Length: 281
DNA sequence: CGCCAAGTCCGGGAGC
DNA sequence: TGCTCCCGGACTTGGC
Image (cartoon, rainbow, N blue to C red):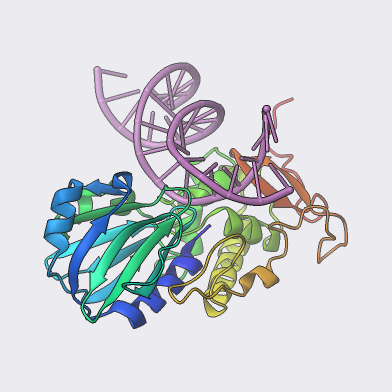
């Protein structure tokens, strides 16, 4: 669930909570969270490091440690929280960063899908998912032309292409559904078949939605909270996601939920008309 | 009980 | 041949 707005909100809260703090000791309770190096080296190398900044690229959180960088991905349900070291430990807490001053940054993840990679900044391109990220929605480099160029090469449904982090960095299932709804584009439309005017609408919708969601602290659909344990407020602004059967805000017809690109997909059958061009018959 | 949710990776097959 | 693209399965646990 954490997509760009949620991860950005976490980044901002973590900046306030742990920037300039020193990591004294690290405990890893679930080894699979740590991808590289091995768990022992991970803990050894982190001990004594200071968190200079907390950055974000796409859905990745980057703890800048100076020479090294800790790259963390929350996947679906990862979350961070700062606790007094002797506070009771919640279920599914897998990694403990014991900081100076008697507090511990804890990583909790019910699904155990999240990942952590500790490496040198100069090795950062070795992380496949990070190195190949496309442009972010609010980056000045994100233009309608950029999107149009990416789309023309892709015959997959627009939903799948927008989910591709190599094309747009940071979108996930929620914001893709919202973007396509606002742009009045059917999720199964082949990306290559989109007229420029529709690409423009997708571009504008994406920017508006992501910017607004960041302002509201992201969407709390299921479990998402920021580093202070606070939920976001954009879930109240969602138009289609999670609203199956409820009236479309534009036309009043019930929101449809189907399956596109292997994902649950919410859209309005009336406002987002199915593609007709390019269908062989 | 069985399916669904999610983001990313990986493997296989298709196509250029 | 080799690359890119596309799809579907795997991973995991809890909720319905």
